[in-house]
Image (cartoon, rainbow, N blue to C red; front, side, top):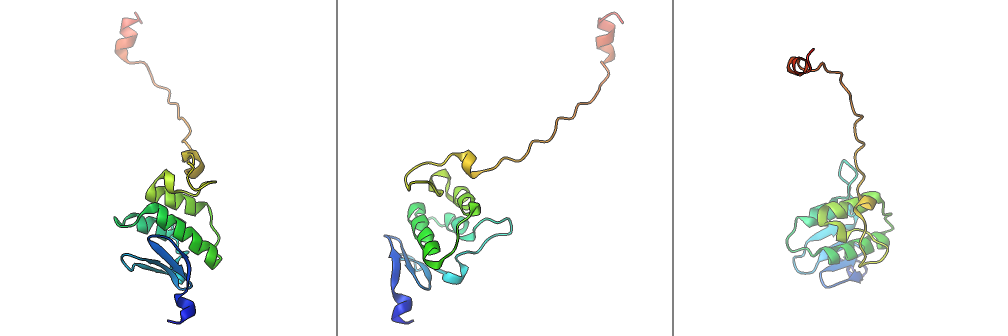
Amino acid sequence: MSDVADAELFGNDDWSVSADGLEHRGTGYFIGRDAVAARRAEGLWEWPLQMAEKSWCRPSLFREAFLNALAQFGIARDAGLTRSFALGYGIRAVEAPAPDTFVTLADVLRPRTAPETVRVAARAPARALAAAGA
C-alpha cells in the first residue's frame, strides 16, 4: 500500500478509517471502502447488522467509526441506516440528535398497518335461545 492509502482519516480506540476502508485495531477485521454502503435485500445496511454479531465489537466505537467513514467517503445516510443500528445494537446505538441521547422507538420503527376488523354475523347458540325462553 502507498502512504496515502495507509494514512488514517479517523481513529478511535477500536477502529481506524483510511482511504481503503475501516479496520478493527485489535482483530484486523477489515471492511473495504467499496463494501461500506452494502445493503441487504430489505434495504437494511449490512455492516451494522453484521458487526452486531461480533462479541468483540463495541457498538459505540463501531458506530462512531462507521458514521465517520460514511462522511469521509461521501456516502449518504438514510432511514435504513437508523433501523439497521437499532435492530443490530438496540435503540441506544441509533443515530440521534446528540451522541448520548435516546431516540424513541417510534422514530425508528414503523408498525405494520393493522388489518381491518372483520365482523361476522353469528347465530346465537341454541342453549342461549332456550334459556331465554325462545
